[in-house]
Image (cartoon, rainbow, N blue to C red; front, side, top):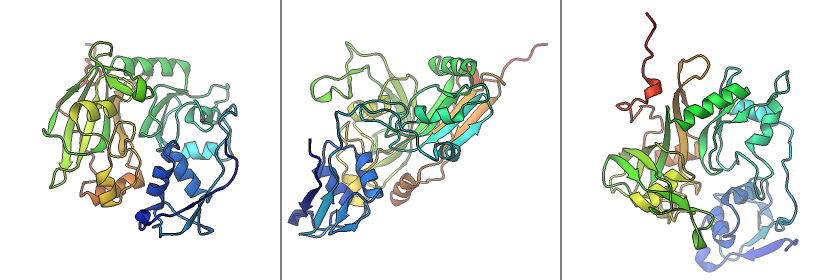
Length: 338
């Protein structure tokens, strides 16, 4: 394990390249979110000076990298000053029964290998007077931003969990895919299973061993050359990486920035876009388990995705329901007793 500072020289064919893109190629096993953190906290220096992700490199420059992280250390959640304020800043809704957050990109929902910061750990800061802390109802990938639901009580968590399991809910994701789908709308069907070999940390389409999965999609906007599209997705089942594997391996239109599922990123380079996964849990419609009111919660696009939308000519303020013609059973008007 390397515990020393590393210095690299910028080669000729990297002249003019963005620093974050260059680092991603030089450090293929390092998560992109960690590279961003190293840049943001000044751990990466170019010719001895702090540098931003968008810094353009020049031939012969010296790039200083921090020591490699100790992988054998047993990592646990580390509380930080300001966790409560951070949760308050990303709260979309809180009525004492449900807590709905707008999770940022790069932040894990739960703990795991090499994860010391996650939403689940921070929720301890929101314990009520009885000592009860919010509980996660579902999960989002670390690289997916957007709506995350927690229950403020055990009963609310259970009831909300049932709503998710029974699919009495409309959960809409926004994404930019490349290339654009051939059709403007449709259903993506493909059984999903855990991968093996090169894809052992990913999911695969396996009609024999996989679980049946369906994702509906609607193309909102396309680029004129059809090299990219703004697409809304509604997963009708809840498999791990469902939208990501369905777009890449069934639709043939992977999500921008999805290195796990083979997005080559030509559009990212051409338009100088952020390299993050361009997938955002944008809207959630459901019937409140306690009040029985119909809830419609939206999470605005993060700033880096808003830049992408604008560069590609898409409407970053889009707020229609592209699946308005489909109403889940639990969202239909309830019959009143006579």
